[in-house]
Length: 158
Image (cartoon, rainbow, N blue to C red):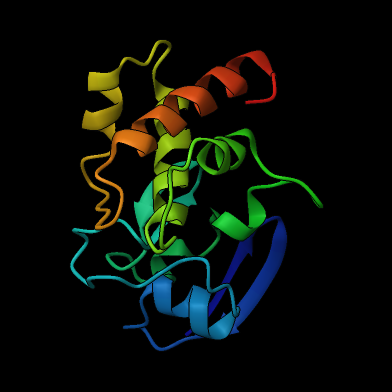
């Protein structure tokens, strides 16, 4: 079947099998490998992307369901030659180790910031429950999200 969507601000048209998952389409058809395929069951959050401005686990969505939608992956988040404030916060506050979960964590954190006016540690931890990290123990991730949220709201560097 033929689908058309906008990925990271660029119009894309492709033929896909009806059973093609969005994560497979993004990685294999578009070559955007920042979206990771971790568990195939929607439990780890490594495949998180934004569809229509909302965080979606791409391993649970068919590419055909994204027809006519705007999709943002981690590759489309930052301005050319720079980092999004949340990406910079993860870098500055050591919110990553192996990096496998990081794209999904960053996109989940951005949605969390956009949905909540004030973020405390409990809200951050609850908001990231759908994203698993096997490396950091979450302490630095929570600090990164708090710093990124502050930078996003004030426009300041983290």
